[in-house]
Length: 81
Image (cartoon, rainbow, N blue to C red; front, top):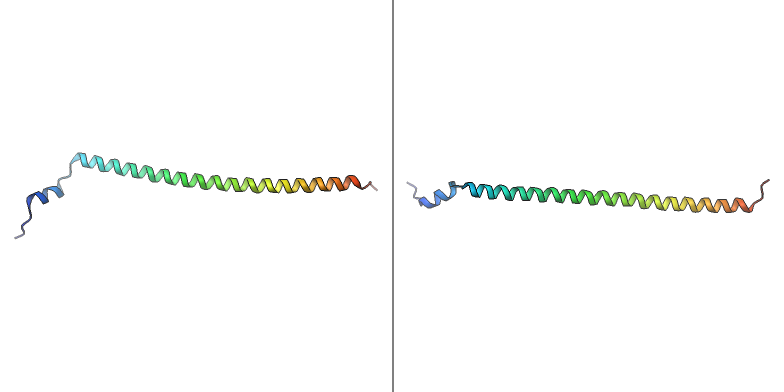
């Protein structure tokens, strides 16, 4: 026969409603943290991608405009034939 103290058995199988509510609260908090972390990460990723795209467009526009101005200057210097 197995001798186990009665107090040890009752502590393992006797979960109170209060402890269940505490556990549910902790689980909800952890889920909210996880969701917020994911949202923050994806927002930052999207922001950086947009910034890269805008920077690229600005550089390309600047280069194209500079080329057009140079071409205009050259055209203005040469008399039409």
